[in-house]
Length: 157
Image (cartoon, rainbow, N blue to C red; front, side, top):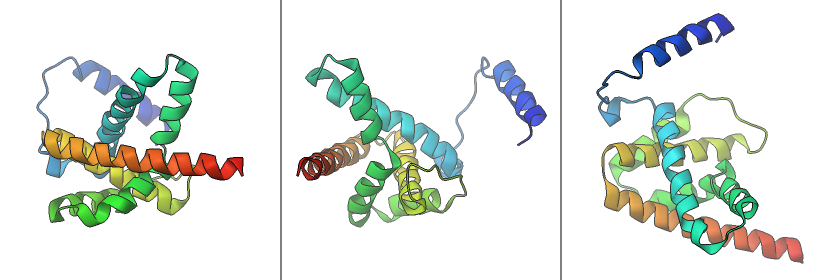
């Protein structure tokens, strides 16, 4: 996207975001937009889970950043896939197959799996499926926590 086009879009969003908007049907939202919401939802969930265990903001930030990384989300998605309903698997597949630029911090596979994870979280949030969202986030958090503990043990050896 060219700079001028970006500026016009930014102007449009700023001019219209104060108006009442209706949310489109979640099934019709682009997977990248679902992932955008899912990233925020899971990030807040992780922060709320770790906040009670430390008052050191730097430790909390470092831990949360690692837990919500594409690498860790990919690990969670790999473990969750067999448990997904057909509808959830379809949303995850859409997220995984969407075109995007992959950062250097993750492999292409990890980034795509991370996007699938975020798209699924965003979809469940927008569909207001709180119980299912909570169950998947709880399970994902534990999987990620265990993976990070294992990584730390390996580094100490």
